[in-house]
Image 1: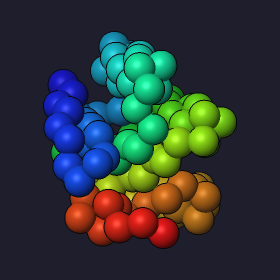
Image 2: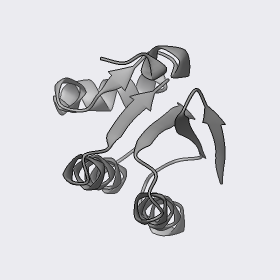
Image 3: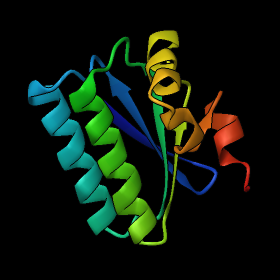
Image 4: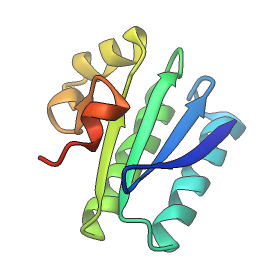
Length: 110
């Protein structure tokens, strides 16, 4: 399930559930694509309720990152659960993706 709200000029997408491939990951990818095509240019993905992620989920995060960067948009990843943060660290993506500890910190311009 995905929830969306506007906070401080950013569209915040709260992702619920695992990103392990299958329909959840497909729904996530499609949703992010629609947001990008609708002109959203400041996005925060709140990953606090994503308990686990695998290579398919990582691929969806990278695709989101690349599509927003190509469109000169801003995309930040906030509140990763400890397991998701571990996967991002192991894959070194934590150094590539803009990962923040909270939605509040993600809103601050860098």
